[in-house]
Structure formats: structure tokens, C-alpha cells
Length: 287
Image (cartoon, rainbow, N blue to C red; front, side, top):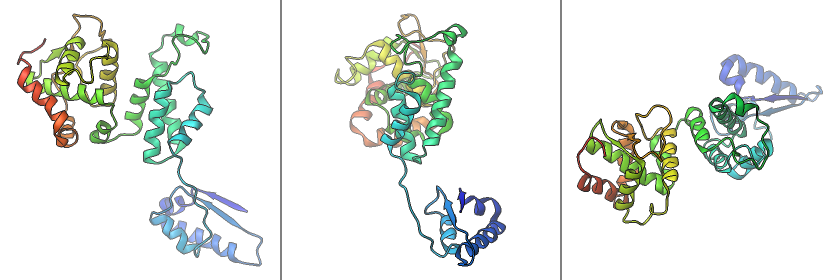
């Protein structure tokens, strides 16, 4: 019995020669005088190469397995990693993204490994050498921002798709921050407390009131890590420092366009946030 994994690669990498090899193997498998059987495995089901396999294989028997869904991938990751080292929300995010794109568990494991590496790069040698218990206060070590950086590198997405998957509070912050950058110009700076104030006022105290400064900063970090928000700050930004300013003066044109084609196209609530900034926020360099 010959098992050919990634059988479609015969056609992708070798063209006509690959087809000739495959046809020879099919002839052997169909020869009743030969004790030879062949099983082909492929991730491709409906593309040109899959069609060619069916033609040359004379419509062989097929057993199609559906791709992994979000719950399947999450279970695989938790079985490999446990439930302590990586934040559950980070595992949910990568499971959802991979399930929506390919359902390939190997891809989820690869990107999660990259997220672990990014976390490790930020830890001191002392922390890396520490023996941690499951209930240690610093657990989980690998958090959502680490995973988002890994996803941004490993699974590039259109800005509009990323925006659509954001929590509502993050969408509000993105609208306000990008609009402030447009109104105030390239030198615009703002503190986290002032950014929250504008978000609260623009939403008429409906969404953002209960969020603390730390939560707001986490959402800002999420937007930065996903490539949607540009800040000119280098090094660590402390949201509790009343003198610290978040530099938001220069935003990417493609993000502004994506906003216009997604949230702002819907009109209503998100357009009202932009209108609030243009109407109520002073035209100054920083605040």
C-alpha cells in the first residue's frame, strides 16, 4: 500500500512529469495482477489540481473530512498547551481566525508558537528562569496583544475585516482617535483620560462609562497590535501618568479608507462619533 500525502503537489511542483508519474501509479493500482494499492491525501478538494486527480484517477473513491471549526481548534490548542500559560481569549481569537480562513490546526499551532516567542522576547532572564505555579499572579504569560502581533505577521488581513471583528468599545476608540488625528493634524497628542472623556461624551455615556483607564489602554494596544492605530510613542506608555501623551497625529490612509467603507458606511452611530469630534473638539495640537 502506497500512501501519498499532499498528492496535489505532484501537479503543482512537477507539472506534466508529475501527471505522468501519477498516471503510472494509477495504472498499477488498477492492474488486477499487481498487489498494489494507493491512497492519496490532499488538503485541496475543489481546485484545478483536485479535478485533475479525479480525471487521471478515473473518479476514485473519496472520503472528505470537513475542516476543523473554532471549537475543534481551541480544543487542540488547549490539549497541547493547557489552560494556564496562554490567555483563553488569545486562544479563542486564533481559533476563530484560523477556522474562518482554512481550518488548518497546524497554522493555529504555528501562530500560537510565534505568540509564545513574542512573549518570551519581552521577559527578562530572571523571569524566564522563574519556576511558576499554575496560580501565580503573572499567569497567563501569553496575553492577547502577543497573539495579535503574531496573527498580524502570520495572517495578514484586510483592515475592513479586522475592524468588523473588533469589540464595540474598540471600534469607538478607533473612530474617535482617527478622527482626532484628522482634525488636530500631524502633531496631535492626547492622554488616555482625555481620550476616554471624548469617547464617553460622544457615545452619550452609553458604552464607555464603566471602562477604567487600564481597560482603555488595553483596547488601544489591541488596535495598535492589529495594525489599525498608529502611535508615535516609543517605549512603554503609562496610562496612569497624567502627563503621558499618546501621539495619534499620523494615521494610515488605508485605515481611514477602511473606516469609511465599513463602520462609517453604515451611518448612524459610528458616523455620529466622527461628527462629534469635528463639531466639539478644539483644533489644537495636543490636549
